Length: 312
Image (cartoon, rainbow, N blue to C red; front, side):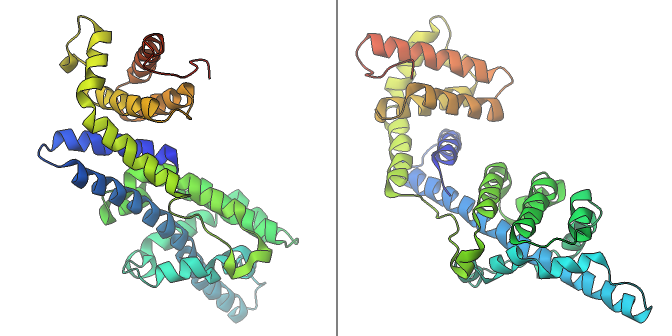
């Protein structure tokens, strides 16, 4: 789950904190980076758990509706179809998620029941939910698609959920927009035939990504003077303190990646850090970082300090 997009963002954030809180060692900073990445994985598992808790609340509500219908001799409410949803049943039986949940102290059901009830009340009025419950058809794919729509349309941009996450863990709110994509990817990957052994996304895909995280952080900090010298020379008459702090750190980390990983195309690295600048710095930072990195890399290629094709 922890991919390079997330690693880049976390590295920039940790570098920012490193200079904001002077006195930390690089070893301590590296531990903070890996702790931050671990918290992102924890959020991923917590959001999958949220789906199970939401289903539990939905069942309570629907059971109450069914009991009322029986008492009043009314038709069975269409929402009862949700109680036979095969995707959420498979997720509930998932061995990996069940093992993770058994070691957690936070419980959505115990601590946020009112929020879950409001969520389901919202979902139960949505067209996609009404279409699902009204449809006479029943398939695993339809069941899975319902939960994908619930997540995408109700949970991805939910201010109340964001507030809960921020209160529970300082790392979680900043990570959610990226982790949301991993949750949606996981839902799409579910296969009924795999049952409870369906694999969730791992924390790190491989050891190379761990090394990538460690190396760009350490190189960004240990080679600070070299990178900032390049930036200072490129800005000519500008003082470094006139550059937005976040822009400076983004360019510094980007240079560490570009000069440390010959297999990553320059264009890929530049585009990734431009996106970080757009999201986390000033309105003009995207174009500024793009122009600065492009100029610096072309200069480094010309001077023989960078052996990469600028057009790839």
